[in-house]
Length: 90
Image (cartoon, rainbow, N blue to C red; front, side, top):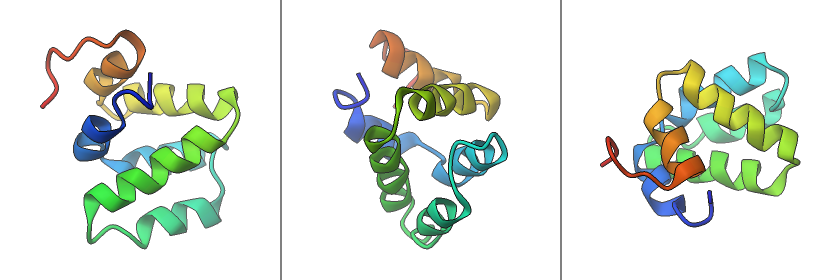
């Protein structure tokens, strides 16, 4: 479902916060975090970088991403990705 909602997620995702959470959980490397942080001036680009990393990794990283969304207060994005329910998202 992430592919289906890629554009909407990239426009609403706080990539910096989610990526830091994923690093803390051991799901992203410091190098990947730095790659995302290097795009912080353009939040959509940072979000796209994070999404591209998640998409190219294992299901464990994908599940970590979903958990990180919940842990960082972005439950509505998790709900959109998992269920397709757009209530509460832009």
